[in-house]
Length: 149
Image (cartoon, rainbow, N blue to C red; front, side, top):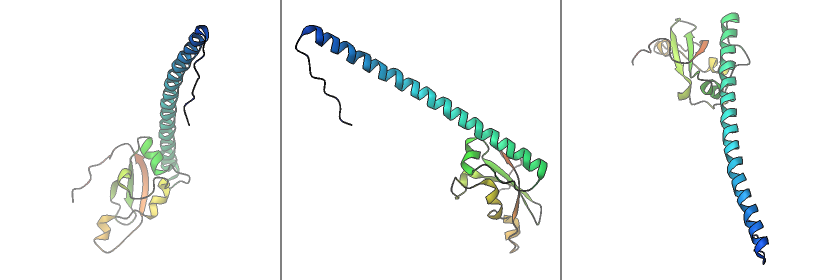
């Protein structure tokens, strides 16, 4: 957008009035920009809180009903809500493992319950078996130490 060009009035009183109005407009832009920044920060905090509550709600549903509950939070909602870890269990050998959602190569709009069919047990893969993982819950940090490989 091209800047406005205010022609300078000829009389002294009109020049003073224009200078005063331009000063008010510049001050108002600063005030409005500050308010916009504050509103954006509040909005982002509310979205983060909503994502956290969505993850907690899904964890409670998983605990109460067992099994992957649809709808689940998306990967980016889980990460934004502070739940960047997914606890899974191998359906064959019952080995529990933590998956870091930030390292997944899936799109961030993927729902967490859709990951169940994509995650496999690395221990069973050594025995040429690829059982599907069972989702347990989202976690804020890994609950158990991951084995070094």
